[in-house]
Image 1 (cartoon, one colour):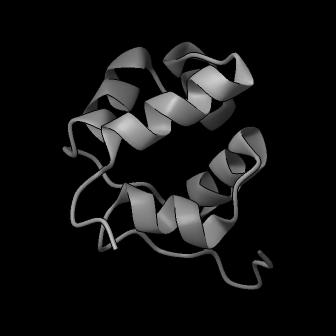
Image 2 (cartoon, helix red, strand yellow):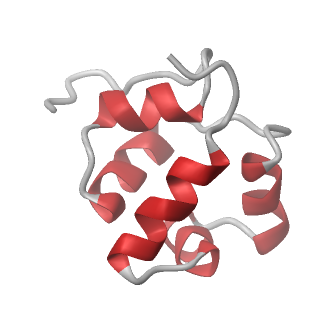
Length: 80
């Protein structure tokens, strides 16, 4: 389990999918600054944001939550 936001893992998944942090901002309805806060572990993902990232990155919600840090919630009713 990641203790802190796993920047390298998320950046690698974005690259695999041909996406950028701007795409994350758009999908999560956040500013670029708010996404930068996620990457610097200064802002936690919310459960609905975990679901959005799961779909965007084509990874299970449990892996997104784990890679985002110890206190990241897994959305209720999610199926990996």
